[in-house]
Length: 68
Image: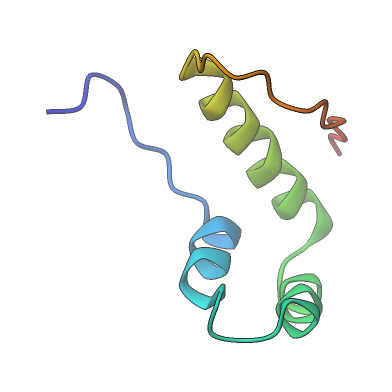
């Protein structure tokens, strides 16, 4: 059983379902056309926070946080 809440993100779910099935450029275009920029930015921040909580042994590259 999970020890924390699961927070779903519509943009991330959409990307996970489509990645590998369609070309990356088309996927980017569809995400940008369908989701508002603040939703995409919030999904990125949530993903980076969740990855940071994993306490991985490998160092992650610096990814700038752009919040709207």
